[in-house]
Image (cartoon, rainbow, N blue to C red; front, top):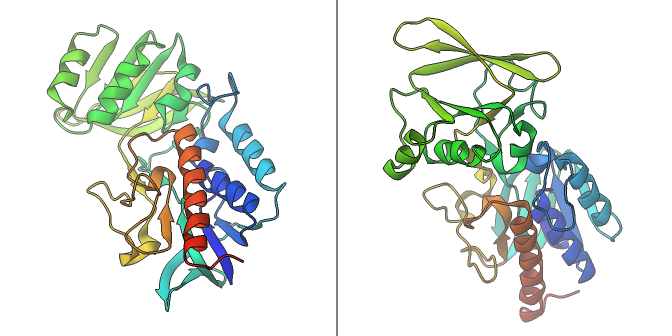
Length: 307
């Protein structure tokens, strides 16, 4: 029986683990990997203390910090289901079952993918799902943003500070972002919008060089020379295993008390990108992870469940 099980090994989960260990809680952290969205970032320049660091290197530093504490880590294990029975949580993975007094869900979210040739091959080598993380990799270059909703339009506008040219590519007949964003796009001579375009392939040698797409009207196959591709078609919070223990908002994120990270189920907390927090950044995920672990400690103390 653990005091706490943390589900997820991203910035929020690792930070929660560090704080839980410092509070001497008997803790198990379960994670498929310690890469996540942060690990795929080409470069991180907005995490305090590091002027510039690759995402994977930052995640290695996070994990090394965690491993200095007395905490059980089960890597390469995936949580399939959590239940609460007689005030005890049961966590079922693809390998084992575990019991705990409390849970922190920090399972993050998975970006929606195009499922086209070259997308996986060039991830971290010109393909990215995070403009804020990787905008500097295309400084002074040409970039393409796949997606014409608010997120895609905002990404295109953000890139104008770095790129000499940006293409926004939308599968639908028109972009669907807010009118104010569409106006900004129209008035920016760095940005070109291509609608009714079906991306078929991302090509390159050691780095992204081209996008191949089909024109929906003419069925003609076209290509664009680009140095980077940002796929901004949304992301799906990883919450399926939580069932009815949590309440979700319209975006599929777990609703939490912003002061404590508590969910609707007593003893169950959530932090990071999986929760309904406003800003999805590494530094805010770490803060929420710390808050959730401290809330667990106070919860266990209030219930007289401390070891």
